[in-house]
Length: 248
Image (cartoon, helix red, strand yellow):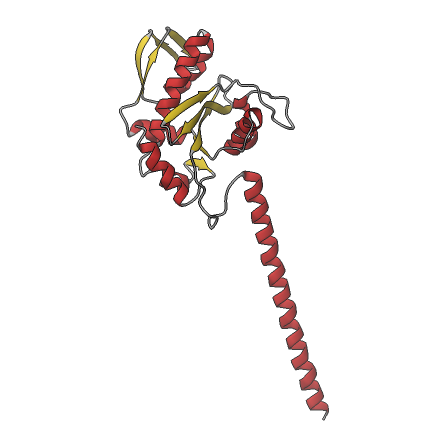
């Protein structure tokens, strides 16, 4: 009788332990899920199983070091995929960057990445943040190496010293074939006349959008590998890639 009682207690204890283990595992899974959802919400990224959005416009950002060496949004372009139009947005555009004393659109990048730039632009213009693509030094370097380069027409002569090398260009056609040249052009554009600067930024924006559509291995692969930062997922990337390709 005592043996039977002990067996019953042992069996009951095992059942309680199994329940406790199951509850603990369930709580851990729930905590991980909540943490993941929180991270995705804060980072602006989407869940892989979310229904693809109908995307008509996308924000393309080039993040490169400025004259001080800080990586900022040097090029900001809004691409209307339906109309096939690229709008260059002035990186010095005044915006609100919460928690900082900075107030230029370019400076939203070091504080919030592509999502920060998209949010700052949306707050300044109204509407929802656009889905974004960010090309950093590695992505730009790969795209330039796989292409004939980025051709622009400088409206004015330009001389830029980047701390190591002096770049000099006459007014007229220029072909950019390296990240260092693109960085110099973008930093030097700040010293051109207002119309000259606007022209250079627009041409670079159009060229960069073209580069984004012909990355080695494709845009989808670059996003998956982390070479291009984006909140686009799955079919969204492929859809945007094919439509960027049609703009070339």
